[in-house]
Image (tube, rainbow, N blue to C red):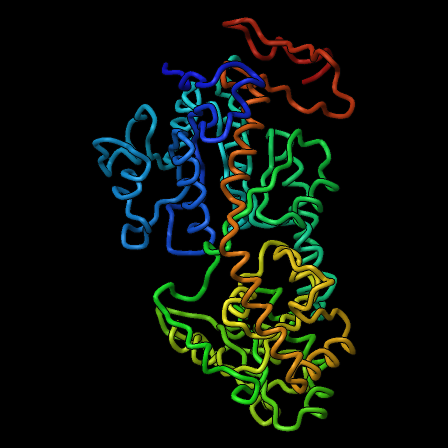
Length: 502
């Protein structure tokens, strides 16, 4: 079997923190994902991470759990193979044979995956952790036991999980603010379920990486036994919603040319529809009393919307308690006459035109994990933000500076919203500072430094061989040296039954 490429740069310590301009030691890395890469936010960020690894002289292969139709793959398999520097790639290699790395592989059977692990090709494995197919197990749950069982004892890979969310903690936080009893019970049950599953998975890994420092801190308190916790932030431009080719004519924007209050978000996402429901329930009446004629403009798929065979299906309240943005409030069904406009999904051009007309944008997200990308649209376009501290935490706002207006209670939200809407100098300051903060975020790329830090950690943990001696976490009550009684060959199994048993 092939072995991982030799470590360039010397032994532990000496080669793990190379001088400026010197690439880190080279690793043979396998990235495992639930699906082929597609044109969606998390996959765009994963592809950027892969390109950073390649830039830093790492060898990268990929393994996909599910088979994705070719038309949905982005990039296409051959293009991805080219990015990974895989020579002479053929599509049928995904499910046949076990090509020596670098390669692209697709799940067929546990036996085939075990054979791949048994070759000891990879000294580092990175798994993207999601629970997309519940109640089916995630790909992480499928492959982790096989990685540890089938990898050669002297070639155990360094295993890292990449998490876009603190899954159990997120469900628990959603349960704190959900008002529908059955849905709230579901969040709380899911939080318990995820906590147990994550604990079992984390006992088999060496590192967990997060895109948000908030998630990293929260999970470190819940799972203190993981050897390494690291940040793996993504560059802000990788989260960008606006098209790169879309111009932003902000020179014509001024306080008096704007009106109304807006929000951007997918209403099917609980953090969004819970936040807007809370704002409408607790703030909207007071805001309208102080700002006669103001309207709330909501961009994004409304809660409860479903697509069937490409056709939009109306939400049925008896089937889904979260129907429309005003669900659970007195405005449900009579939104328009109470100043609430559901805009639905807009094109990039329509989004730009609409958002530039707003006086301000609210982000009343009370409980969240991960990164709220909707904030970036407002920052880039200089739209003043009234936002909760928890939603703003990944974006490095200095609370001593006037960049956004913070609010976490209903009274604060009403006051900040009315102040920004009516005071021209405050609006102008927030608009200018939002844009300046966007420029600072866009020009500062923390991602590559985080990738180097991860690779340095792997180098220190694995040593000159590139592999790690893995020792499983002890189980309470487990003997230090388990006595394993195996039957002799050609033995009658009934002869092993305990005395007196039938």
